[in-house]
Image (cartoon, rainbow, N blue to C red):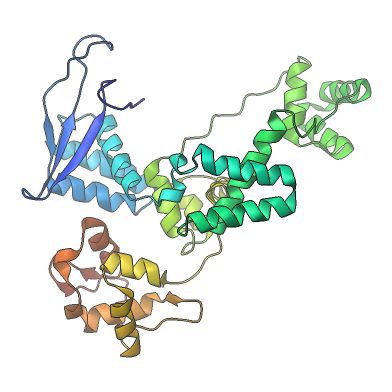
Length: 350
């Protein structure tokens, strides 16, 4: 597990060296035992390896794993764990602040907890107060945090026990598990008691019944979260599940946890276009008024409109201001920012 320097070794720190055009990466490795404070030499990640990893952040889980393997082929001196850690560091730097766990400070949680104690009206007032403090925060993310704090409150006993077990319920659970198997017993008890199956499974474990252990789900990485945040409104949930090698339920759960809407919408928001093209709202409005870019009623710019703009008015862009992420975003529309010209890729038509 990675830790912060200087307290612990095996940390993969990165800093962009603009003057040299390469990524300067300090790779610290332990010399001797874990407790040794000595660190090994400094390594460098070349710009091509950094470009491969940056591009993979915008793609699914398999592409991210392939990128790590590809970089390791270029740099066999670096372990795959360090390369992956570097990619996660890049992804973390590009995540919205409200997605990061450290965004929810004790002060913000205190406001929301006070609202939870006051009931629905208090929750609305608390959410509105937090939204006024942080304009960039999505309302869905604030409400997701409220739900999380509610669950915390119940777990600490302030909401009372949700699943009250009686001797009769225990006996029914034991009998059905013995006759029909635990799986059928869980379904039957959920119908009889109204309790969630997770609660029944915990009770069965306390009663000494053989409960099969479920495989531990794979932790979400920064790169996966970045991909989800950027793609959840452009891809259907089944497609996201396939790209990230996760179940559809896992996608819905993570989207809800982050306060994201999983409703698939076409195109990009005006904010996304301004951020990726490094232009102001005034400049974008000029392009809209000239008819070069079309904004729909839902304030989204379609892929077809962007492709047309990049094909016919690419000279309006200041390509020198684009970072690697923006260049990769443009490649998805068939535009090669490195060459400074539109390149139609196979399978894409204007």
